[in-house]
Length: 597
Image (cartoon, rainbow, N blue to C red; front, side, top):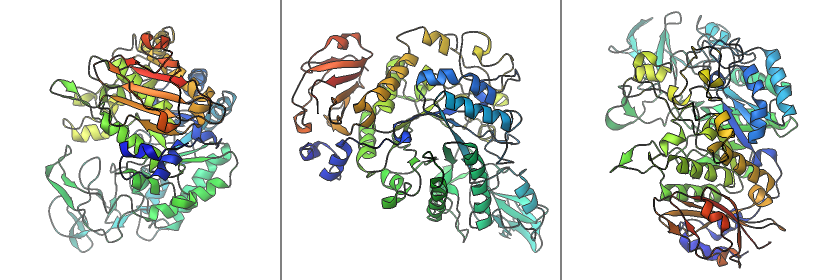
């Protein structure tokens, strides 16, 4: 297949060799390269005991639904014992289950039941910090000489007066630098017992572990082995780029005038994020996982500035770090809102550029594509325009599930669940919303309970006092209603996932971006493995009909005969030739070209 002639319509920095690699079908059968991974926020998925909070038995009850949807693995957000200050991301015991969610025995039952439904389980591993109630921290904070005294990041501070001033052994001291917590205020908290400050990148109840101490690495690796021995498929590594801090504790540079939503100065994070030492830890972690059978995986929470930086997290030429760092560059650029009355978040140039980069700039690494998670407003809202919301949601789903990438979903995404941000500060549960109100309203809106039925509490719980309120619109946006509607978003996801699983081209094909100067339509080709047919995906991202004019000759395609596999526009189902195909406004179209490769 000759591809170099496609180069003029793609970014100039992409080489013919990169294009060729992206277009080449894969023969790799690794399960995670073809998987649909489904994030479950355990508090919000299914309550089995009527306390208003989701739990492990609730997840087990819903495994048939997940199997029907086509999920290959579930990622469960932290379920470990925790004071729940940050709803599980403040871990007080890495080798048990919080009683609110169940027990170790119930986890083992869930794991066994998931296997019966052909679903793997991935756990969230919070590496950067623990709870301040973890025994490790309690011991570390008890004195400067105890065995775990150096397990966290401690500082005497520096002489001075002002905010966060304390009287230490040598007089008045303030934090050692200007580092800011993502939850607001100084990232340094005073410990009266030790007469020192400890560092917390996040909430003050989440002290950062000192990864420069080998004993910390050993303890965390032991905790991971505890779960690997039980049979989990791997881990999603929370905030993994933030494991290390500058040993000199230098001030972060100020990046802009003014104050952020928390009232803090705008500073960079060059001394607290993406330090090179983290890659050494990941290589050792990956080596540990490689000693287990069954292709255990490491997924990274990696909000990174560009694809070149993302590539580093795979481990370079040796591929010995993360198998799947998240590519958040494609899906999390949109914040919602309108310009001149029109939502611009469905940004075709951005999507084309980042998808092209994802396919060509990662070398032979495998992408992980994601549009939704528990930390961002739901994609329905971020990409909506108030008129074509359902069609836009189908476009996002189609990109997610037809791209050459592992697909990461978030519970309720397949229903079109929307964000329900609190309107009163007294209703906010998320700590970042409590400290940042009213400019920062927190993440409760994307964490509301899963919507199963149109009945009380939408089938999530028998308790009318659920931990977060059920989202408005649940009467129609729910599993039961959408399962009965063949035109629902739920069925769109099911059909895309089934196509992805059953069709060799969708599973193993390469990618060629097409018509790359078209301002209205995103088109790309999934190249066919030998004996299969190529598949064309075209997505109209405009409010006007668009007639396709695609030249497939450079991709080695010499037929215009097509067969529609999936479309949300009935008119396209009868088209048998590519010539003159017109996409209705915001239409999604997946068609097979009738030429075997």
